[in-house]
Length: 562
Image (tube, rainbow, N blue to C red; front, side):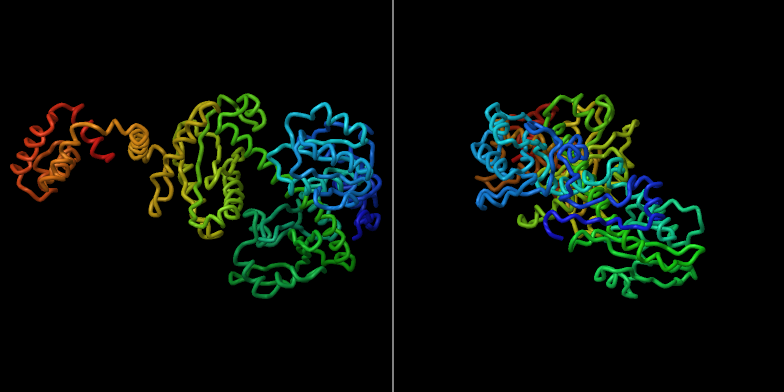
């Protein structure tokens, strides 16, 4: 499709258009167009981006045509910006002189708006430049990537160019119901991994595979394997047309009814597929054409749904980052997360274990998606964010403080990540705290848990490793304040070094045995009287009184942290 070309993907028979109207997908017929439609205005685009984009300047108002999103390239010729473009000011800050130049250039090209990243508004002189250039300025948050902004604008422009009254693009369940009525069968919309994105609410008879698919929100593995063996997926992903799947019977004599399937594409990218299972009435001659038309509409819905979910997840993640770092007012952050600021919370920390720094970024994105989706399935209000090689998830804490359920979930997550994505994760469960302002304590505990985990022990809670983490923290203090290690134990170590004695090892073993001489002597392989002699010599050399509990504790810590 050429830039600015108008395409009408809903050239449907009246009956099909009426079905779409009844299910809330379309209020008027034949009026959904791709980016470039004259009906798309800046105001209507922004209606689809409420909470994401904010108008900072609009000298010509909002009722101006909005065209394609265009990424600003300072090295490109000025004529790359065209009339009605929405220009993304990548790498340009509101205070930069480069923004003034871009505004004038975009205004001269009759572009509609320039999008910048800022949370502080515009300097007065920039507002004046925008007014002179006759160009709108729109702000988006820093936490949104430019690729997400581009994708959201593209889908918002599609929604803005639809007829007034059209339901927001992204309601996949309403679309599944519409497809079911149009094609004449039970419908599922799936991603490229055969996970169910939406399904039609059919009252008729369905086969066992469909029932299991809906309940498990994914096509059962054995059916995926059978369809793969028959070459169905190969044909589906390589074809732009409807694929017929004849009935099958599995090893348990369970029937798979005949199905029609078609891949859903956005350009060259495969987004997923639509499957329609035959019910009591065989498919008629119009079913295939209806499914082709539905696939074009589904592409818009899936892109918007995917972009919206991804954006919402990442925005929530940035709220979690602010809480973990102690930035921003707690009440505002709680409101944005939809959480009770005084509620109970717990932080889970998932460390990505990889020795390849070059692969860390790519693996971190995969791990963040995996952890986010898995934890949201466990608790809907879970929110995750990646910080360096660690992914933090904030969850509502159990009222009774019991983290057993969290431990089981974390164990399953770590195991499935290894099996399905080859990601190696360790999971640390922090303490359950009351109030969002105490979440940093839970995060610190989760971080300490990660420090004591090994390849054999990959999941633990702070309560399970409290002693190890306490010693780690004490070790940190000692390394920052080395004078704490100076004391009587120095004399023991010096004597061993000069005379070849083993007084330090004998003292450490004695302390580890809680002062039980026979037990300590057995561990050292010496007679108890020999150990008693060594302990007397240690007292004579250093003045340590091993009958004093404070001196015993000080000596043990000094030995441990050397």
